[in-house]
Structures are given as C-alpha cells and as structure tokens.
Length: 389
Ligand SMILES: Nc1nc2c(ncn2[C@@H]2O[C@H](COP(=O)(O)OP(=O)(O)OP(=O)(O)O)[C@@H](O)[C@H]2O)c(=O)[nH]1
Image (tube, rainbow, N blue to C red):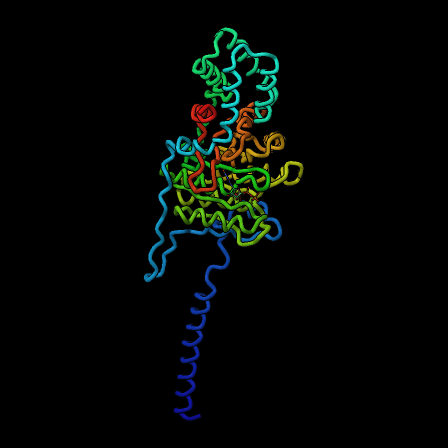
C-alpha cells in the first residue's frame, strides 16, 4: 500500500471515532432520566407496588412558566373566612322554618298536649332526631311553665338558649392544621383526608377548603385520590389552578388511590407545604371492600405524615340515610369532623344536632351553595340565630 492509502485509512478511522462519540452523547441526552435512581422512588412504590393500572402520579403545577406571549393567569383571591356564615345566613332561610314554627307554637301560651305534639313533629321533620327532640321538649315544658308567659321575646330567649345548648357551642370546631414537627425532627404538613358517599360534594368541598386555607395564607397541596371518576381529578385541578395550588394526580383512571395520596403528602413535604388535602372517591357504606380501602389510604398517608383530620362530607338533604353513612364511615376511619353540604335550600337543618350526637364529632364546616366561597366554618350562634330570624 502507498503512503497516500495509509493516510486515507487513518483519516477515515479518526472521522468514525468522532462520529461515534457524538452519536453516543446525543442518544443519552434524548433518552433522559427514564429510570429514577432507587432513592428517588417513593418508598410506597418500593414496599408495595401500586395496584395494576396505577401509573406514576403527576403534579399539576399551576405556576409552570407560560410562553412569553401568553399573559400569566390571574390568581383569584378567595373571600376572607371571618363573617362567611353571616354572609350566607339568608341561605338558611328554609331551615329557619323550624325556628319560626316553634316560636309561633310556644307563643300561644298555656300549651295543650296537641301543641306539644306539633312541636315534636316539627323537630322530627327537621331531622333533629328522637333523643334530642325528647330532651328539648322536656326542657321547654319546664322552662315555659317557670316562665309562665307567652311574651314573644321571652319565649324566643328561652328557645334560643335551649337550641344553642343542643347544637353545643363547647365542641372543638377548629380544623387542626397547625404546624408540627415529625419524629425525624423535620416539619411536616398537616394532612386532611376527605371521605363520604357518592355525590355528597367531596371534590367541591376539597376545592372550597383549599380556597379557605389560601385565604388564611396556608401553603396547600391537593391530592386527587378519587381515581374512580376521571372527571374528579380534572375538577380538582381546575379548583387548584384558580388559586395557585398544585394538584397531585394520576393520569390513569383506576390507579391505586393510596399511591396517589402517598405521593400527594410526599409532594407536600418536599414543597414545604403546610397542608395537604386529599380527595377520595365516593363509596357506598355497604361496600366493605371500599370501606377497607379508606383505612389503607389513611395508613399509607401516615407513613409520610400523621393524618390530622378525617372529614366526612354529608349531604344535609339525605336525612336518616346520612346518619347511617356517618355511623359506618366512623367505624372504618376515625372521623374528626363533619362537613355538612347543601344546607342551603333544605328545611332539614336539624341534622346538625343529630349527627353530632350520633358520632360525638363536631360539624366543622357547612356548605351553603355552589359558589367557590360558599363554605363556612360552622358557628353555632350564627346557626341558631338564623333559625330564629
Ligand atoms: N347547593 C349546593 N350544592 C353543592 C354544595 N356542595 C356541593 N354541591 C354540588 O353537589 C354536586 C356534587 O358535588 P361533587 O363535589 O362533584 O361531589 P362528590 O362527592 O365529589 O362526587 P363523587 O366523586 O361522584 O362521589 C355538584 O353539583 C356541586 O356543585 C353545597 O353546599 N350546596
């Protein structure tokens, strides 16, 4: 071979080596980090792989940088929390019929047995429950006898005092989301699990609660563990986006809800949030498997941070069926508070008393409409005054 041939071969070899090296580097960049190093995989996934159909949870971060030409979305400023129940008082107008009816009967003075029967019927129809109804009637019988007058103002004062005692202003109605330090000495978010049967208003309530917490300057993360109804995660993402709250969700319908809940709390810890709210799928209280699933979701969440509140969402219009739900849910997971939704436009406000008695757990919030800020911390005095106005 000639010298020229050797030079040609040498040049070819150099070119091949350079091209090979460039191809390798580009290939690596394109593949990206598809496999997370072991320490980045959630311990839940390592301990117990999510059920078939589960997929990696996705965090919808509303603050993702928008293209320069798109104006940044304006975040809504939720309404302040104080005074909400007063603003929404008119929505209790139908519940107010209990108070009005009782007042008009009591003001007749010198009540006969059929008047007392009318009082009893009014209370039972308003879902106050048998025990509290009997208790209230006994007290009213004694008090009106002692009072010995049918003066409207005095009768109203007696009724107000007794109704207030029944609603029990001494119960702890605070949503406990105060900062806390974990066993590892690190701050962890307060976690809140929201449960209930289908259609009671859980997703709406989680969205409204997020707004209420944002109004009080909390950093919130939402977990869309309702993986059963595809629209629920979208619904929650919309609620979150309106107030700049990230939502952890799975892209796959039917994903393991416990895995999503776990990742939401993990995301909350990582982001330094102080509250994580987790929505769950509606479930009928007679489906044992689904009720057990709630216990699992709670256990799995508490591997990241203790579950501070379990809120049961009850539809105020469902009456005695709501009472049965309350009983079964409280057996499955310790309920710490009740959110009574759709109290606007129902005459069945007495369920506040009945459900608290049944569970020994306070009503912490009431839903009084479909508007984004139509959720108010429950205030017994405002409630009783609305019944009597
Ligand atoms: N009037 C009124 N409607 C409400 C209230 N809270 C929720 N709703 C309505 O109730 C309906 C059901 O609400 P969702 O939040 O979707 O109920 P859900 O419990 O998450 O439903 P599932 O996931 O199917 O179990 C919606 O139309 C809400 O707007 C309330 O306080 N008052």
